[in-house]
Image (cartoon, rainbow, N blue to C red; front, side):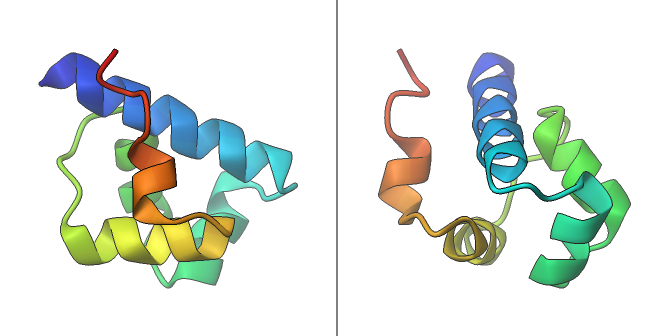
Length: 72
């Protein structure tokens, strides 16, 4: 499970950086605290579905696109 969470965090971080957001700026854009975003990107927390929806929406992705391939 930890490996999947780490892969999800890497995916979110990569997409966020590609969009030109700082971690703190992206967290604010999503309405999340920066420590929550940091924890998510490091794979230290299991995100709730509403958080995944929020993050994926602000990245311009569907949740399925965000999750695609992270279990491989």
